[in-house]
Amino acid sequence: MSTQTAHDTRPAARAASGDVLHVTGLTVEYGTDGDPVRACTDVTFTLRRGEILGVAGESGSGKSTLITALTRLQRPPAATTAGSIVFHPRDGGPAVDLVTASPRTLRALRWTSLSIVLQSAMDALNPVMRLGAQFADVLRTHDRTLDRKAAWARAAELLTTVGISGDRVRSYPHELSGGMRQRAGIALALACGPELVVMDEPTTAVDVVMQRQILAQVLRLRRTLGFAVVFVTHDLSLLLELADRIAIMYAGRIVELGTAQELYDAPRHPYTRGLRDSFPPLRAPLWRLTGIPGTPPDLRRPPSGCPFHPRCPQRFAGCDTHLPVLGEAGGAHLVACRLDDGDAAATGTERTTDGGDR
Ligand SMILES: Nc1ncnc2c1ncn2[C@@H]1O[C@H](COP(=O)(O)OP(=O)(O)OP(=O)(O)O)[C@@H](O)[C@H]1O
Ligand code: SF4
Ligand SMILES: [Mg+2]
Image (tube, rainbow, N blue to C red; front, side, top):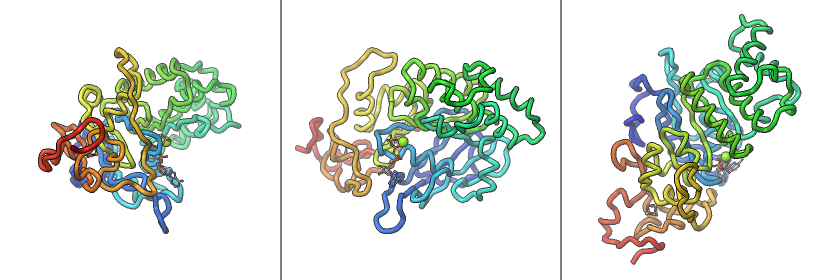
């Protein structure tokens, strides 16, 4: 975990060599005229080489908006209105701010440095092309010296790494099961040896057994190939098993960021606790599932103060007017909650666990 704090704006040039990505103050809005919806606000984090950063949060918390902004695949009406996404190439070449990079620079980075796996592999795979031809297209875009035969052979090898028989290069996507398509999408994303792979709910469309197989393969490939991953899901218990660190998003903001162990053993934000207690753990004994009362806010009209205050069982005086900033909760663990600011003590308000002030 990097020791960068939430609002550390050290110049990219001084980045530690072990970091692959510095995201600082990233803000993304839908619709710039009239009444814009701010779906990501002031998102800041650092990703180390080979690290898996999980991003979790309920539906509408801004996870996909963040992913498409990171990869510059966003389309209008989405627009990045502030912040930077600085990518540091492994070869020590100059850092690139993906927010301002030209289309040509982005094309050169795509697949070789930065790739994406989406919720439905059908979004990435061309339904009318055999897998081998699709892999060959990607491989040859970045290595013109590769002939067709060698590219198809490489495609077969790549399919094998995700547990699909190499002779499936001759198959069309519709001839594969959903789980195989997802794994083929992951193999395609890894084809050119990227340094960073961004995955948006890559296992949502498959059953639990296939989900486990895919996650095990991602972990194994990460160990051998060393790429870093930003892995988005609404399922925190899955991330607790997979990720090195986890960022929790609520209403477009990161409200807690820490190691998987920290978030499992000692979540600091009331929302993280609620999220943790909403999902059955994958391995540990089942605890009573409680869920989070209420629904996520409408980002067209976000709540004042702490965006979680209308649902927070520990809110206290001032939570509806004061916006907590992401700050250190001990070591590199970051949390955006006034309980960690000492504000509760300062106001003298007695905190309750049933939803109000006394
Ligand atoms: N095309 C759009 N136009 C306007 N607002 C949008 C658009 N797409 C998303 N939003 C807004 O951005 C917010 C975040 O959406 P996003 O898809 O990033 O959430 P998510 O966390 O990925 O949700 P899910 O878990 O359902 O995939 C939503 O609450 C929605 O209000
Ligand atoms: S700042 Fe207040 S309302 Fe927000 S999470 Fe912390 S205690 Fe709850
Ligand atoms: Mg999404």
